[in-house]
Amino acid sequence: MKILIYIEDNDNKINSNSLESLKAAQEIKANKSGQVYAVTFNDIIANELTRYDLDKIYSFKNSNLDDYSPLFFIKAMENMIEEIKPDIIIFGHTYQTRDWVPRLSARLDIPFISDCTGIKIEDDLKFVRQLYQGKVTADFTVSSFPLILSFQSGSFRADQISNGSSEVNSSNIDFNDVVNTIHPDEKFQESESEVDLTQADIIVSIGRGIGKEDNLPMVNELAEKLGGNVASSRPIVDSGWLEPYHQIGSSGQTVSPKLYIALGMSGAIQHVVGMKGSQNIVVINKDSNAPFFELADYAVVGDILEIIPKMIEVLDS
Amino acid sequence: MKICVLMKQVPDKDSSIKISMDNLSIDESIVSFTTNESDAYALEEALQIKEKTDSEVVICTFGKDSAIQVVKDGLAKGADRAIFISNKDKEDLDILSIGKIISKKLLDEKFDLVLSGLQSDDDGNAQLGLIISELLNTSHGSLVMGTEIDGNESIKVKRELENGWFQWSKLDLPASLSIQSGINTPRYASLKGIMAMKKKTIDKFTIDELGCSEINSKVNLDKMYIPQKSKSTEYIDGNPSEIAEKLVDIFKNEMKVLG
Ligand SMILES: Cc1cc2nc3c(=O)[nH]c(=O)nc-3n(C[C@H](O)[C@H](O)[C@H](O)COP(=O)(O)OP(=O)(O)OC[C@H]3O[C@@H](n4cnc5c(N)ncnc54)[C@H](O)[C@@H]3O)c2cc1C
Image 1 (cartoon, chains in turn brown, orange):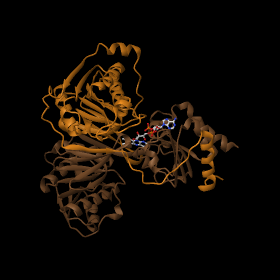
Image 2 (tube, rainbow over the protein chains, first blue to last red; image 1 turned 90 degrees about the vertical axis):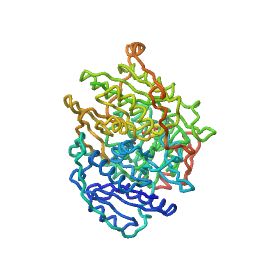
Image 3 (tube, chains in turn brown, cyan; image 1 turned 60 degrees about the horizontal axis):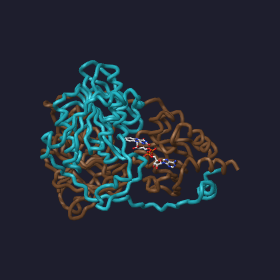
Image 4 (cartoon, chains in turn green, purple; image 1 turned 30 degrees about the vertical axis):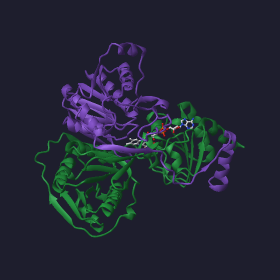
């Protein structure tokens, strides 16, 4: 099998999610034989990749590839795929991948199984992904190759990638036939957060299970009695019940407190990436199948609206 | 402007999910269905653009017959008309196939903007709006957290990037935007809206009628299962008071995080 992996460049650094996915490519090669090629649009990154076990590294250069610009990225990848005709093309499931790879899939009429969490290498290959917000896992197969895959961050460990030595094939590319209709501006950050949750020892985090804004005072009281800070999942911020800096997750803060208490939240991957480094995780949820329980050190299947007031009482006495 | 909003029906997030005997579907008799969360934000964004410009908002839904409820709710909130494509002929299509079918219909309509939620709460492919941009040959923006009308030729969108970064991007029209949750505050349908909905047009099509019966999936579902737990977890039971006492005791004496 010929496998092509795209390595994403974030300000001249290798995106760790795309690098981890190299492990997936190497595993397929080890079992099914073949070649693993890497492609990147940055020479610095291409040179760093030479220490991994790869059959060849391709690096494309053009000023339109210096910063992320989807239509140029798609065109460069289209050329690459036509040239080496891979059976599988692999990406990390990053925000950039979300933006350009579905479009690449449609252009080439190659199906794209996005946000996979693993592969099963049997007689045929099975691709594992989550459905229903992590409540169900499913295996998928394909009736023919080529195929595009992306892997969720954390699906593979970068320290298990086999080293080797490989060569870079660096070349210029021209884009005479690209009509660019997408014009990105500079990146920026919104106002700095007022509370630095990354320093908190105890975080009391609430999700949609809190039900209504009127229930927030008891959460604040609990956090205060524990000497902790209040945080939340995205829907609480989307509803305007808490300021954005309270949000934990891929589009919020990343924290690793001594104690993270998850109250009425399902444990969606975009939330969990922001707190999975916590030392102790306590999950209270009324649905015994909530995905968050997979991460819990201590778990309670129950109603937070009943348990929070009792915790406040115990802390008072 | 002529705006299309792609909307989908999904199980309510609070529904517990049970896998059917065939391991290929979920038991639908025990779940309640609702409009996909980010699609509701996409509709609201379209309605707000309509209020600022002179626009027509058309809902497009692909799904089983029960999904007509999503269309009706959207029309009651203020969309002008709807296109409903029934998936009765083929239920398990992959996302690229669904994109081809929807594009086939949208092609005749020549929309200036196609809005969709960035990801569905069931399959979570997060691809449809982008696939459509390619098949209709428009510009695109994903993870959109703000829009600004910019004359008749383009639209500016604020895109969410990782770790709290954002970026404005100018997109030539026509464009396809996939909308992130939280971009606005979705409205409720008014009584007047619900009455008006009943007179609005819903054009219904089957996959065959769109000339798409040849489209076949290359991605096949093999098996569904409930995720395996790998971490060891201590479950705490009792009534709420007992649970509260046990937890506080664990914080103090095992984790030693309380002073
Ligand atoms: C690109 C992208 C980026 C995102 N970024 C983030 C991010 O940074 N942070 C983030 O959090 N999310 C993010 N999300 C959203 C994420 O996918 C989930 O939708 C979100 O985290 C769900 O929040 P929740 O757990 O509060 O709500 P739900 O998923 O609705 O879960 C609510 C839970 O509460 C339980 N519950 C209800 N009532 C009670 C009760 N009385 N007692 C106990 N339990 C109860 C329910 O059983 C359920 O498990 C992002 C999504 C995308 C697509």
